[in-house]
Length: 405
Image (cartoon, rainbow, N blue to C red):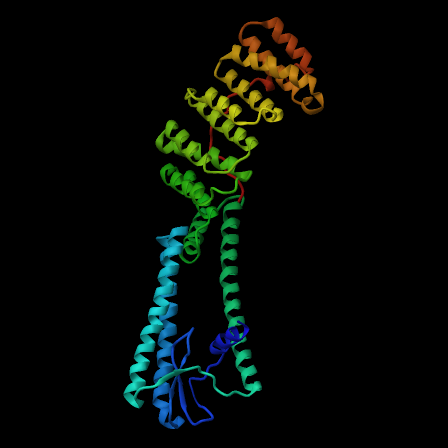
C-alpha cells in the first residue's frame, strides 16, 4: 500500500513528460492517473526529435487545466445560485467527477492518436524516470510550494468572506443603520459565497423597515429553511418575528400554520417547546384565534414524563396565565389552586414563583368579583400594593423585534 501511495504521489510531483530508460527505450507520459501511465517505444527517440510531440503534450495539459478550472467555477456558481442543497451538492459533485475524467479521457485519446501517427503503436508501462534523490527532492519542494500557494489563496478567499460579513454587520449595527450599503455588500457576498442565514435576516429587517412585508417574510422563511437542526436562544425572537411578518403579509391564521410547520422541524427540549408555545399562544390570543391554545398546552403536558414535575409546574403556570387572558377565570383559578400549594410544599425550588402566582390568582378572583379572595391573595403575596398592578396578566401585542447582529 505504501509503495502504491508513493507511486501515485510521485506521478503528481514529477513534472517530466518524457525520458529514455537505461535500455534505450523512449517513454512518453500519458494522461492516466490510476494505472500505468507511460507509453513506451522499443527504440530511442532523441529529445530533439520528440520536441514537437512534447510541445503538443504541454499544450494539452494547459487546455486540460483551463477546462478543469472553468467547469469547477461554473458548477460552483450553479450550486450557489440554483441548486444550494445537499442533494444539489451530491449531484454536482457527481457531474464534476464525470467532467473531470471525460476531459482526461479526451486528452488521452487525442495524445494517443498523435503518438501513433508519429511513431506507431506503443506499449503501456509505468512512468518511472531515473531521478537523482536531490532532483526528486527539488520536484517535491516545488509541488509543496504549489500546495502552500493553494492554501494561501483559499485563506484569502475565506478571509474576504469574513471581512464582507464584518462590514455588513457594522453597517446594520450602527446607531443609524446603513441598509443600502449592507444590501450592496450582501449582493456581493451572495455572488461568490454560499448563502448563510445572517444575510437573509438582515434583508428581512431591511424589508420590514421599508414596509415590504411579503419580501421580508420570504427572506425570513429562507432563514428557517437553512437552519432547522440546532435551536438557539435567538431563535425565540426569530419565531416571534416570523409570526409578525406572516401575519402582515398573509394573515394571522397563516402565521400560526407557518409557525407550527417550522417549530416542529427543530429538535427542542420540553423547556424550549414551552417557551415557543408561550410565544404562539400570546400571538393567538392577541389576534383572537384562541381555539387551540388550551389544547396545545394539554398536548404538551401529555408529552412529558409524569415524573418531570418542574416542567409540569411551569407549563401549568403558563396555561393558567393564558386562560386568564382568554377570560376563562374559573379554569385559571383551578390551576392556581393546584400549583400554589405544590409550590409552597417545595419552597426550595419555587419560592420566587409563589408571590407572582398568588398575585395572578388574585386578579382572576377580582375578575369574578371575589374581592375578599383577591385581597387575601394580594396580601399573602407580600408584593407592595403600589406595585401589584404590574403582576396582572397582560396581552403583549406582537411586533417586529430588531436585534443586533
